[in-house]
Image (cartoon, rainbow, N blue to C red; front, side, top):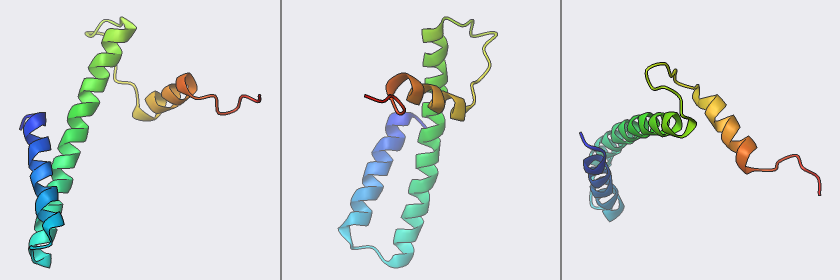
Length: 87
């Protein structure tokens, strides 16, 4: 399923859940569907993030290995936040 279609379906699920008109059982079914769709979105975004990282870094895509998510997050924090700088 395309990313945009997943987002649209997630929006529909949120509207239905927020309406308060569903039974508990139906709400749980929709919630479960939403969680699965959310996971699909995250997987797709992770792949795109990897491609962007490769393009920005100038690494040859054929030789590039996926950077572990934790290392990516740590690098992002180091680059964007002065957590330990004293002023």
